[in-house]
Length: 232
Length: 232
DNA sequence: CGAGGTGTTGAGGCCCATCAACCCGTGTGG
DNA sequence: CCACACGGGTTGATGGGCCTCAACACCTCG
Image (tube, each protein chain N blue to C red):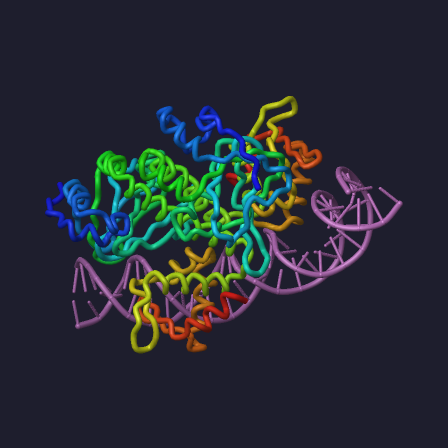
């Protein structure tokens, strides 16, 4: 079904979950891991499905979205190289809480849930690191919650772009470029607004020279001005 | 400074973080714990302060709120008996991300951050349970995020009450009562609306007989109808 | 009894979701 | 090689949900 690709323990060291672990532990994790290419557009898993694997990304980008029963969706986060995803259900109810889609060609590692659990039991440091990772995401979610409840759409869009810069900003000639393709709808779904409002806001900022958008890519020319907007 | 109260290992068994651990581990955790009464109204810790202790609640209720630089705040969650709070910063940046206030007389246990960390290192099950706890809270936060971005105020208030029923519903004569005092402002700050809108919605529902509010307490007479509203 | 925290209700208006129409670039198959 | 479909983006018009402002009633506690 899936091609068997030997997993190098060196690759594991780039995954935040396994950072600074002794080589023996990395080897152990590598032995249980399965590598797999994710062509652009591939749905890695579906919301509600039982979590058959726990995932980590070696390269590329994956979009995590959550849909309600009415079809309205939000963008939970983008997963980049070194980040884990779809790992929490291994320890809770066993169901993926969201959809995951590769938005560019990517490569993932994955583990059988019981293997990962066993690894965490044997090496408490892995479990502790996971608390830190999930804890930071919780903090970010609560921050977004507060912003969504209290701030205007343009402030939220500005914060959204600043966060994306933090996560995936690549310095270049005209400004800092966000490393992955980003549709207007994506920006809207993170900021908690509609495609139309996000489009108007970005068009206005492009007119003002704060940013440049080409194809599905954004280059931020003036993060300072964005910060000013995001603070009211 | 603080009265020394002997901590019973039996009390530890009621804390979800330590559920189903061998007695030896409970004794270990109990030996490092400090018990303390929290009189109603006491601020347990402040947002931004360095996390001097990690906390768990034995009895009573604690309100966790987060304020932005502009003063606007949201209610992150209520902490009830058996739940932990202020524990994540032990593993991340060491700063409390929110305020915590006892809303009724309560009793907490607390640990020195490095003691709790050492305990998690020695006993991976503790760390794993914490991932599960934090993971569930993350899932809930993302669900609220989606609802806030896509649903109307009354649907969100209905969902809010249903969640509070789940967490703290006590069956009684006129319906199910929420176990702790709850102001209109609290409901608004969870649902992501204003005191005024929340007040109007609850008044209307009280007129319709869906609920009764007395003092600062809510009794839900018809959860079914609330569920219908929450689903549109 | 006074003060402060809390809750209710009205009036007004604005932000932004919604509806609608159209444009553009890309890829694909006849 | 062109027609066409399709995903994505832009922009205008409109209206309503709910935030904001304001005034007042209520309760509880010192």
